[in-house]
Length: 286
Length: 78
Image (cartoon, rainbow over all chains, first blue to last red; front, side, top):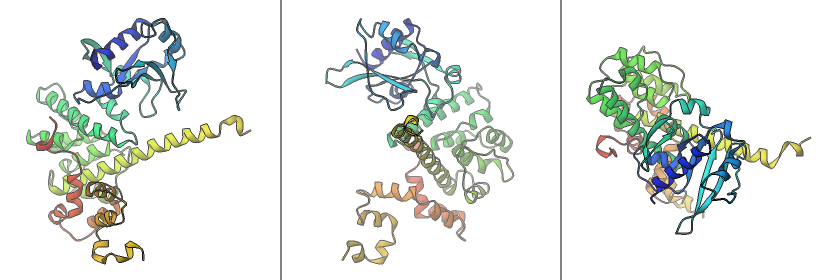
């Protein structure tokens, strides 16, 4: 049985005991097109089912009549993992559940925009591609390597939906974040109408996308505050630089790197706060 | 005498070379990544300089940003 079939088998087993999950992590990355090896099953569980998780899991066909052993978690209120078995090469096979992920919005919102697709010859629910990218904005460089590919896939989808007339141009432009995406939209002439680019600009708070759009939108275009602030000197230059020029492309990368560093720092700070809280639990601090 | 004292000033002024010669980075790629992560003040100084957009676009630091950034059409996975 290959990895995709095994994942599908696991999800079906969970659904049979009433557990609602969205696939994230390595299998979601594979589903969206980046072929890579993964041995973990990384799932986001509906929080309503969190308290019953062990009970239902041990009732499922995955347990085979024996209680699954639970591994340690350094986010016990948010993350649990269970040992399913061992692969032929001796590595452990872990099933991992998130109740709430610090990088993502609430489950109901994620579920509302989930993507369902065929994987392991079953229809499986995955995190949407933008949410998957968001879940990868961690301190780990390997996750950012995934992002660099996933954002090309996302931009390619946006481009295809725009050329097919399914997606309005401003909405598509508000999601572009890769250089490949910029080049696709540029060559197809989608940046020619500054008013449409301006509408796209108004719909995004991502600094990377704003850095892509600003030179096309004209010097007076209004841009919302970004989630990670851009340096005013950089923003001012983006408003006047020739679109798609060498300097424009370089400034996009300046903004992208500052965004990545800020998100890595935020993720590291979150982990540090958890470690600090665990080292000094409230009971020890009367 | 510390190794860093033996370096020629012009070598020490190259931030990537400095990272390599002081063993803070093992490869050129790693040194460039480290430098880029701390280079925002240098970028701002460049943008505030009298250099034209064309000259800035050809500047080694901004070329390095493009080289380490998002893939273009020819290098894309798609």
